[in-house]
Length: 160
Figure 1 (cartoon, one colour):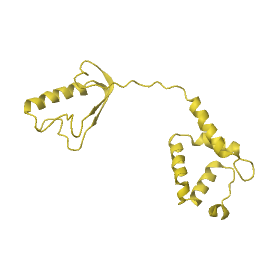
Figure 2: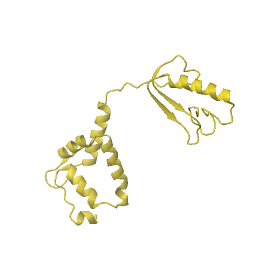
Figure 3: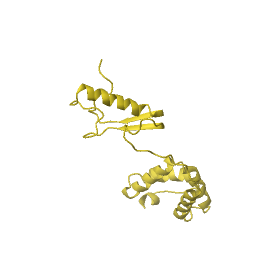
Figure 4: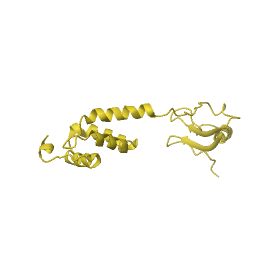
């Protein structure tokens, strides 16, 4: 309230009004959550649409009439207007089961405590067999392979 009393004046331009308000109210613990939510709206590319909504809510003098309701309504309408997106199927399987199949992308996950791709306690033949199996999994991808591995995982290629 002190910031408002000290000269916070709205002029009917939502973007500059927001920037001025945010600057004057910086450090207000009560508004930190609001600032985070506004950053999320920016990431969702909703700012231009919301600026138009707020421009339409401007009373022509000093306030945005029922701005919170207008923003809620706009965001709800946006959710309803989003066409259904085709979702890509995800298949979860072992490397053994992937043999003979093909995918746009493959994610290979190695556990930190179990399900290791390679283990230093294995004999050389078992390590070679797992490298061959890993090759099968990698070659299932048409475009991209992503590895998710613990930092202490063994190198996947043999040292020469």
